[in-house]
Image (cartoon, rainbow, N blue to C red; front, side, top):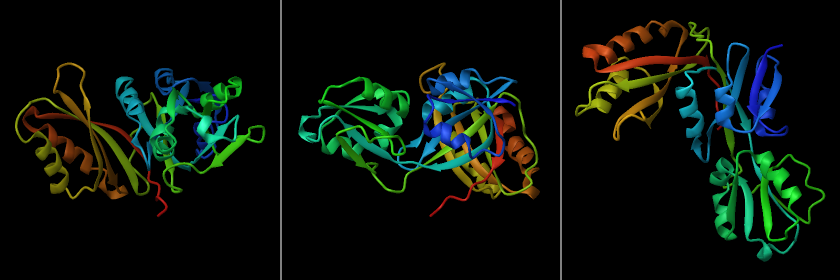
Length: 274
């Protein structure tokens, strides 16, 4: 059975999302998203949280995909929410909170309302474990709603800014698996401008419009060579009969050596619940 690196320890939303993948894997828990991406190889895939309805893309994960030259093979969606736990029922005594950095963005209204100072962690289960080892009444924790909370004095469920909170997870591979889609799919690509000139972004957007491609996302990320140099991550819909459009798009974007265009994944499209 192939191994799958996921954000640990056991009990994280990443671990739960792994059960939704089409294949089964031997799970290898790692402490950070960066670590997950760095150990993906021919023997091991990775699964990371990639986008959230409340807090947007996980930029750390996107940057690690680009840095490690990984490919997106599959995506799954998982409904998430959070609970606040403490060793005292008196909320006014609680001054600090263990919270994972993306959970912080999803629960910002609760944190702000109660004037809590965050103690940032790398995973939700790290927040849970650190809280259990800390008996101070002045410290609480924001944890996944599914964990066992019966031993704590205070528990407030569903504290995310919205009851509709969903995270998209992507499975990553070192092997380039770019196949013609057999059903309506998503395509991810990296566009790197080579010439810095007026209208670079307009030219990129125009290429998608000319070819009637539904562009779902576009994000700029620093190239990390010179200040002001950026690359673009794009996602767009692709249908089975449109596979040849990738070559057309590549020629259009790379004309006169203006950009480089690299597909980093064609994978299953998931219909998001409304």
